[in-house]
Image (cartoon, rainbow, N blue to C red; front, side, top):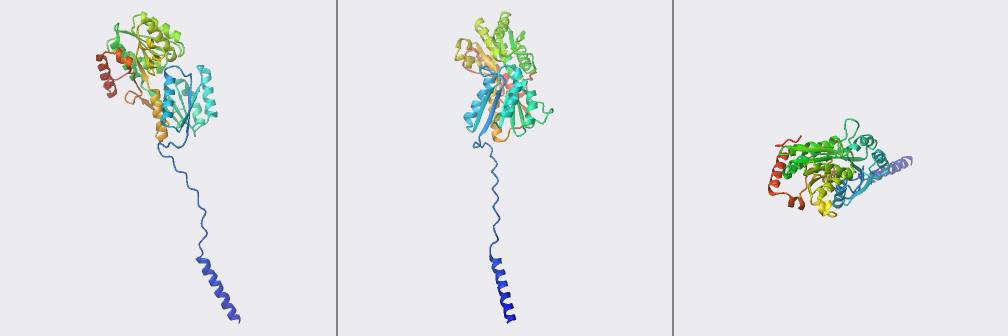
Amino acid sequence: MKKSLILVVGILLALSMVLGACQSAPAKPEEPAAPAAPEAGDTAKPVKVVNLINGVLGDKSFFDSANRGMEMVMKDFPNVEVKTIEAGIDPAKWQAALEDAAANEDYDIMILGTYQMSEFLEMVAPKYPEKKFIIYDVAVDYTKAKLDNVYSVIYKQNEGSYLAGVYAALMSQSKVVGVIGAQDIPVINDFIVGYKQGALENGVTNVIVQYAGGWNDPAKGKELALAMYQQGADVVFQVAGGTGVGVFQAAQEMNKLAIGVDSDQAMIINDTNPEQAKLIATSMMKNVDKSLYRALKMYLEGTLPFGKAEALGIAEEGVGLAVNSIFDELTPADVKTKLEAVTADVTAGKIKVD
């Protein structure tokens, strides 16, 4: 009996083991799928941009060009949201405006420009390594701090201004031309060096240079330009932001030619003052709008080279002369032909601009 009982128990144990082995092992809980990496050019994810201006819109020049770049981006990339902050014309408030925006605004990437902001950005950007920054018209000093979240774009304004100098020389009857800079600083002198070289290499005997001492003083710009026209200059190039509005007023008063800067200023002014606009023969375009569009497009594609600076010249459409209906009407065919040849030679490196 005991042997039979032992035999039955053994059979039952064996059977239970077989049945247990046949059952499926409990499934491991599924791990959540890793989120897909955004593809280049992904337009689904909203991208928030802060456009910080150390000045005000309405200069019909530099900052308005930057704003046009933002408008171009928003038109072509609907997922991009841009908030523009005007810090005003008081330099004492610019650092605080940057620090406040960096700390309190909701953004993925912040855009700012001009040499006055580079030192402030060198202090601020390292505090927000998860954020990205673009600075234009100046390069931060990448040796000062860890700035691998900052992309700098600068412009070969000497190349574009060389073309402006060539054009002024070819259009001048007196062979005396002028240039008014906002301040005696490196970026403005880069314009002036190129302009003087282009003018003097093409028949001009005297280039009158003056500095206005500020960016938002049209009265000073007019005063300086009137003095240049009275000294015999028949073309004056303004490199002075809002101060340059006064140069155009002087040109209209004296019936002389002027050259604008940064934006196609003749076409901007033509809407409100066509008589003045028709004397702005061309403008040395610093294509801030195109450069910022290019940078943000590269950012969306994941190809923007943060941690370095790029210099954009004629070949990269960073600079050039404005060609419009006023230019076409004022400019003789032989001058256009000469400009085309000079442009090609600068691009090819045959002409070296100081």
